[in-house]
Length: 90
Image 1 (cartoon, rainbow, N blue to C red):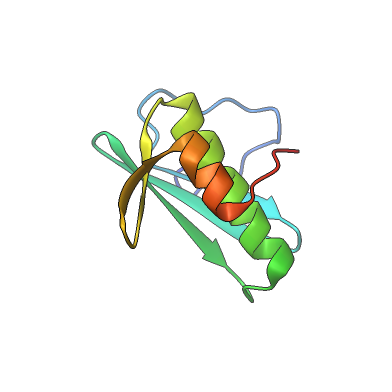
Image 2 (image 1 turned 90 degrees about the horizontal axis):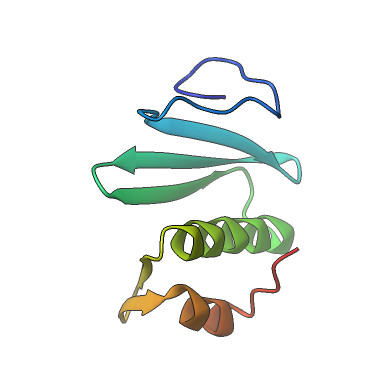
């Protein structure tokens, strides 16, 4: 979904998108954009597979935008987050 509307898997969102929803292992991951920040939310039971999908989404967003991930101890780079979370991009 793009901003609450159905979308095809190969559809590219408009540059001013605010929310993307992506199916991930039987659950839903939502990316919300506000200014220069993204929030990554998971919908469903947070089993190991869903937590791993969420981690890959967070890592990919930080890596693509050359940004940071805010964790309990503060902001970390995408590569540091990958090591902390044992992320192995698919």
